[in-house]
Length: 145
Image (tube, rainbow, N blue to C red; front, side, top):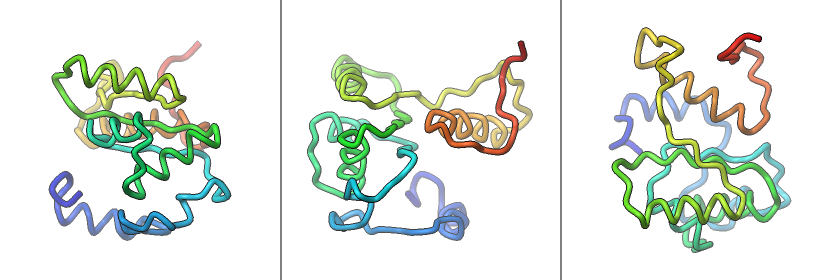
């Protein structure tokens, strides 16, 4: 994650989390269906993670927690970051969609006319959170009428 967002952003993110579980802690609370959640967002989601979820290869906590969301019929949002895609990627996306996941690639909505990269990222994040039916208490409407 430090490679993805940098050490400074990683430290800021760490101040916002309520709980943190090591990737190898398969026994963490989120690996159980009795841990109630509104769903789960994986952002960014690598093709490796998406493929593991599609195959139910529960070899780490991220994949196991995603698998739990699917078996409990909760929302699982996988924001796949790879580009370009080959047929194997597309088949893995189809497989996770067939078992209940939602795959919204993190594509900026330029029709919202974001003024900064942060505004574009915020918009993508709001869209992903909205897929969980979580009330953000902020306006996220893109179209009126």
